[in-house]
Amino acid sequence: MHWEPVVAKLERILQTDMEMKIIPKELWLAWGGQEAMGEISSIAAEGSRYFKLTFLEPDSVLVLGVSADELRDREIRLIELFLLTQAEDTPALAVESYDEERMMTELGQQLMKEIRSSTPGLPMAPLAEPYALLPSLRQGKLPFLVAGEFPDTLQTSYSERVKLLESFFDEDVTLIPLQENEWVVLAPESLLTAAGDGDEEGLEDGLASLASGLHDMIEGEWGGKSYVAVTYPCKPSEQLPQVSRTLRETMGAGRRFDAAQPIYLPWKLRLELLLSSLPEAEKLRFAEQILGRGEPVLDTETLQTLDTFFSLDCNVSETAKKLYIHRNTLLYRLDKIKQETAIDVRSFEGAVLMKLALLLYKVTKRK
Image (cartoon, rainbow, N blue to C red; front, side, top):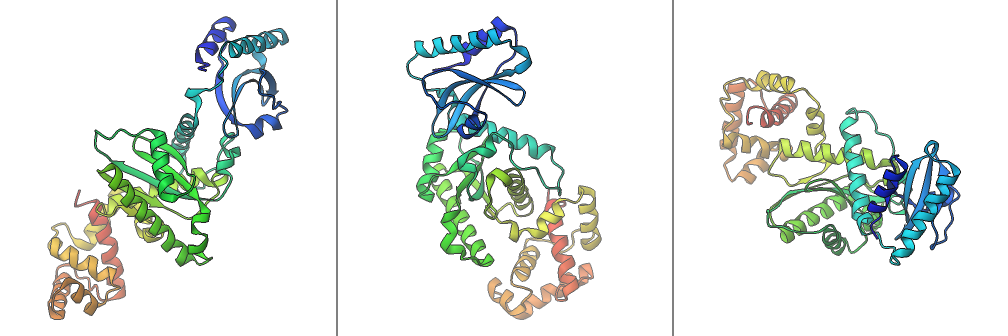
């Protein structure tokens, strides 16, 4: 049944605010609540009086909370009787408006609020109750962030999205909407038990493979453009706020510095994440110090040459082969860059300076 009209009527009668919320069944029992299904009961906890409305699947309880100072004993008994009467008038105790989607949406809103108010670089507090007590968030998970630019004609419900994700992972998943077209996806850590095998490189390869497959599946099913970020396994009840911020920072840095890349891995974006924390004026000043204001050599060909050169660890022969040009042609291009900028990218210091300058150039002069 829908409890909102019932609660609204109680608020008018008692002239006090009341709040419906979902709490873990474990928390209700820890407060001293009863497990009986067919009765309305209440209990005082944490400065409030909570009335149990109904149990929800799998392990949650829908409760009605009001400040303990607002009610006398007689009012408590009358409220319990009134709620019981309402429940008996509607035999089916299904609470459609308080399902998993609503609970996860509320969690996502809370996460966004905490992320926006957090201080970059400082650790975030663990997940707050009652969410921290949910069984699905107390086990090791693989955290993904999925975002997209999907067609206006795309109409998919929350349950359809969950079903699609579970068909991909072949496991139960938790889907937390952060905002429109942006979701945290938590998949079981057991998916990487064999792939990781305790080796960090193997773990990272496994996570990257899953992220790539997830991206391809989403674009294939929904069309449009999608982006996926992933980070190391976590225990959501303790780390979900911090992990969610890391995923959003990773995707933000990746999309700013390399918009063509749809998969974002924090261990591949360490420089980008570091540079993202710099003020915009500092980014521009550093890029201009290295490259000058006139952008004399940074045409498409030069950018491709430098990107390929750095991706191949400054190996001249491999870069020439990858670009399908003669070795001498590549050396000519590198010499031209040295003449224009006074930076020899074949030296370690020069390569570092140019790499940093190029990253900043992509988010300043190319805007």
